[in-house]
Image: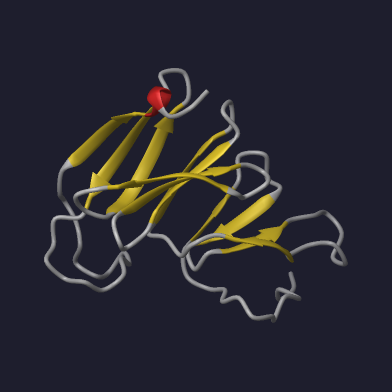
Length: 139
């Protein structure tokens, strides 16, 4: 066990996701680190995406879907981490899952009135479930 060797301009800490292929750590602060089996190559800065509350991967479509606290759903190419499309939502999502076969995104939307970023202890929660057909925006 060792600390992250990365101490640059991009914040780390808090919630994060590991890509399905195990190659990247995507922090909810927006910092993307490359993961490797050797200590020298592990936890190296790879990219920056916008800070987000929730994310979901679509490995068959090579995408990462994030939702920012500003209610912006962002479809990002994977593993290039380049923004492909942004869609404004009525509320911010705090949890998402992507059905690869149906190209359908399921997102739990925040029903609270607070404007602070989501955390598991923030009191945000149950809201509407958004079912979004991404086949219209994916190839």
